[in-house]
Length: 398
Image (cartoon, rainbow, N blue to C red; front, side, top):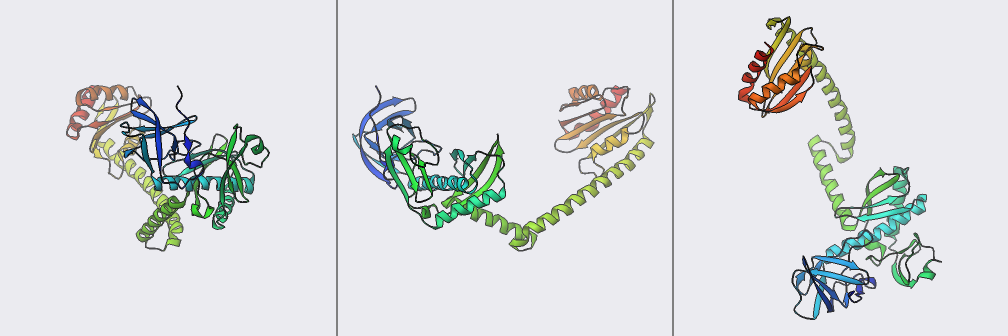
């Protein structure tokens, strides 16, 4: 048997924070009890907006579910009395009202500024998103829509909620067509937007505070716009200012000069890294020649066996490549660190298999790795066993 219909108090009064209701049905649930009331101010998750939270009969509401005509309230224990009091988590509710009404304003602004229609809406814990029906929306179009949306907020226009028959709603200039039957709930932003919506909203646009677009990205032929409203926008502004102030302090400059100085220092860092890489390559070449000159020759090849560190200027990988660029050379390199590493390499086309050699060595000393015939490396070794590993590898080569 279907649960009785619930009168949804938030439909007509989004600012209702507490209410009294009568329990009309209770169903045991694996997670507790699904309590049905004759009326409720709790909003269940729907249309991209999360559900309300709060208390009912003195208990935390674990979940609010929309079950068609009824609203189910999940509680840990069955209420003791038929008459119960409910209290909405107001800061959460008002936040959702700001975000959802802000979405209506922003979606209408995109449509008015560039003809872009909203395909979907999602309200997250930290920010919200709308997906627009084009993947060619640039920064200029976004800023135009954002500016228009905030102008509507500053004008503090009335937000009116009313019901009308479905056949009448189809003849109205709705931003998005509705296919509902019976009476349709409409949300009207005076002179700017008219939409069918079951969500909770503020009563004037000024209560939204501010709309700030955070970023945009292309997603499957659409443009996803991330935005924040009201208290969220204020929180993000404070966080951004704090980060910018800390950056300015570290760079010993003013807030306005931070972007330019970062760009300048990034270019200088790139140049320095390129110069360092070239220097490392030259040092690796010199070091390779030095090691090859003193390396023993066996079976027509020179075997370089050396222990180094990851912080040596010539860099272990560069050193290995510099050694095997010489004909008939093998590099057996142990790299100190926590954990330690091994690098085995030979001149291209050499007679040995470095991958097989590495696996034989690891079977004795531990570690994981692999590679190709001419180059292999491994990590996860005990630093104290590097010399043992290199000696073993050299003995296998013969």
